[in-house]
Length: 281
Image 1 (cartoon, rainbow, N blue to C red):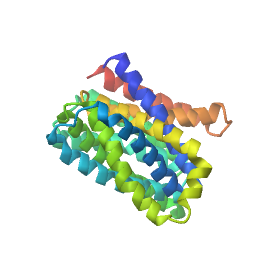
Image 2: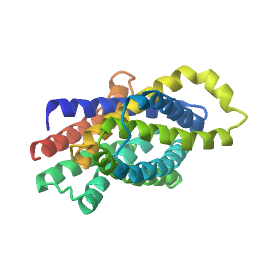
Image 3: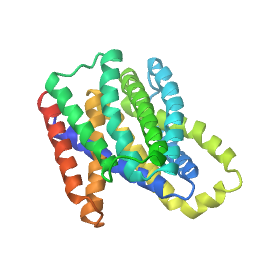
C-alpha cells in the first residue's frame, strides 16, 4: 500500500468523524442527516453533466446501496438518540472491518494472510475498546449498544455493495456522484415528509453547517469508494475507522476529557494492527 493511498483514507477518516459529530450535536438528528445528504446530492447533481454514465453493470449496486444506506441511517440515528457518541461511534465503526473481512472473503474472494487478519483483529479491538472506557455497560445502556452493532451490519452491507459496484462502473467518480444523488432524492423527501412543519426553519437556522457537513460527508465516503475500486475493502475500512481514535485523542489532549492513558493504549493497539495489516499485504 502506497503512502498516498493511506493518506487519502486517513483524510477520509478525519472527515467522517467530523460529520458524525455534526449529526450527533443537532437538535433533530433525522433532519440533520437528511438535509446534509440533500446538500451532498445537490453538489453531485451539479457535477454529473461532466462525467459519463456508470456502466449498466453497476446500476444494481447503486440501487442496492441507496436502499442499504436507509437502514444505516435509521440505526445510526437511533443509536445517537439513545447513546453517547463515544459509545455508539467506536463500537459501530470498529466492528465493521471484521465483518467486512469475513463477508468480503465469502462474496468477493478477498482473503488476507494470517498476519494481516491478526492486524485487522487488533485494530478492530482497539477501536471497539473505546466504547467501554467507562467500564462494561449497565443493563439500561444495552439499547445503544444493540443499535451500534446493527449499524455495523448495515455498514458492512453497503461497503461491500459499493466496493463491488465501483469496480463495475467504468468511472469511479461517476459512480460516487450518482450514489450521492440517489441517496438525496430517496432519503430527503422521506425526512421532509416526516418533518414537514419544521424542516424549512431547521434548514434556515443551520444552512451553513448543513452545506459544510454535506461537502465533508461527500468527500469522506467518496474517497473511500475511490480507494476501494483498487484495494481490499476490509483494509480500507479498517484504516478509515482510525477516525475514531483520532477523535477521542483530540478530546483527551485538547478538551481535557478523561481516560487519557486508556485512549493512548487503544491508539497504540490500533496503530500496531494497521501496521501489521499494511506490512503483510
